[in-house]
Length: 266
Image (cartoon, rainbow, N blue to C red):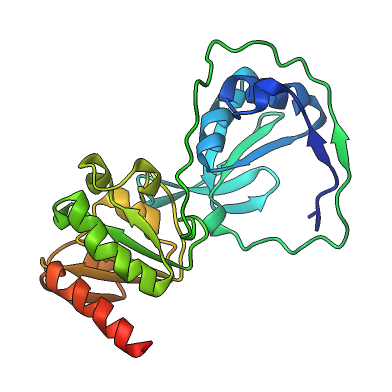
């Protein structure tokens, strides 16, 4: 196994500015004959472009790989992470997306990898990006956060979601996430969604506030080291996976928890 990156290939074309699937897919396919494996993280870009790449070179993609058994054999979760499937790829190319939270960070390379420019005809795309907006924040990202505070639909409104979770997250230096139900209700933006159709996270501490624990959500937090659940329903499924649980009214428990943390750091 390689201990470092051999080279970085740079395709510098204005059409690639937004990392749209069509032009980016064309670049990857053009480079494919020189490689046996085409790999991306299970990010929004990776999930967008790699299925297109697999279709263009007529192979089957293996999604959200969590373990590399050997060069052509992989494990990945299926059925909302309730089962682990082992697959062997028989085609000439291996096309994968990797669940990054399942792997330890790579060591820093001793030397910088050389950068090689590649000239590839990207062509025109049928879609045009009209605008991009960035939501600036001083908080950690969900993918890299050590602590995540996540809220569910039980918080009742966006105002209450922010009023309860933001002070607690500030005290813990945490990222803020949300269940799909909370996102659908407009309490949080979709980039905060945690779960099978949102972000797969692996923090040291995950605090689920008012989240019942649907299978879709649990699939996104199984790699968390410690799960804390706050819910008034003692039978909520979230307690089956939680390491610690508080049963009671979240509108009383969360402010009290925040106050106790403030006193502890006073």
